Length: 117
Length: 111
Image (cartoon, rainbow over all chains, first blue to last red):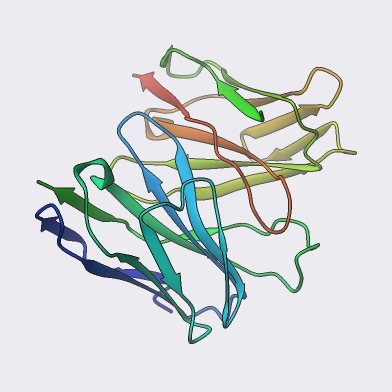
């Protein structure tokens, strides 16, 4: 099992460009998450999904969009990149049946390092 | 607003000693709290989960406590080793499948 994989691993964008980060998991997890991590800081939740076809906003959703068309994939889009979006982006997934479930452990991908110039 | 505070300074200890990391939270009452380990350039890895009705949880050399009155969790690594050097993140569970992560404490264990 590959676990959680992220594509690409590194990317440099110019201000105003767009891109999509792909996250894939092969553990049949219901929940998927996108976080960003800035130097010396913890993880901040951008968007998350509790099942195929559903998405919800996290703590810092502005400037990002997501889609979960297939259970195993969670896409994060930047429509018009800004230097403030320079960060390391982590995708995670976890097992869960309903919104009231207790937190199961999250499995994280290796991260995507994005630089916006 | 909800706030999570971990040790503000990095923690440096000698091999063989016990490392104690602190996680304080304010303005909410999580029912669960998770601890993760993160190595440089990698994603976090889950270590332990403790529920609000559990005072203590152990796993090998790791021990976590959860004091809902003090709104604090302590994370202990006994007989620490240089391989334990990493950043440790606490993540109180808020709602609907979301956890909020602290900024982490960087632990360095010196031989």
